Length: 227
Image (tube, rainbow, N blue to C red):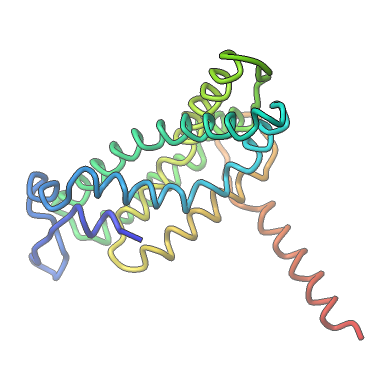
């Protein structure tokens, strides 16, 4: 899978052995827009498809059999359109961040702190709550097509609002990119399991997902130890 940080941030080796990008123009010149878009699309598919189970099931359940595939495709088009636009912004932000003349460890710590603050913010909870909203969809004609497409747009907007800070992390790491991407994807999937809550400052972690995983592991272990 292509890695965005490697293709978008050519670097030199300054003091303290940290790698820093030379310039924004040089960074962007090393990758075509098509290759950047393709790399982001692959990353998006790997990380976001697990999050679409509930909304896709909703679209299928609200569509007649002969329209289900079409409705799901329109929903995915709307969802992907918003995330591709968000990806352009996140990629540009990641390049600019890596051009800041600070140690790589300090930059990563700053981004991680930003993600932590956003994770605890009431705005993050509001975005998560809206992500649980599944609107009524028309059954026939253009209204059904527009409804599925609009649902993809709106669901993606709230998803971007919820995920943007965490999605920056895989774009900024030079080593262990796939591991960080997998960890973020699992975190995002796990936090979707929690029910909507009143927006306020609080820690939001993958608690329910971890509890489910632990319970399933115990059940599996019990089954293996039984004669």
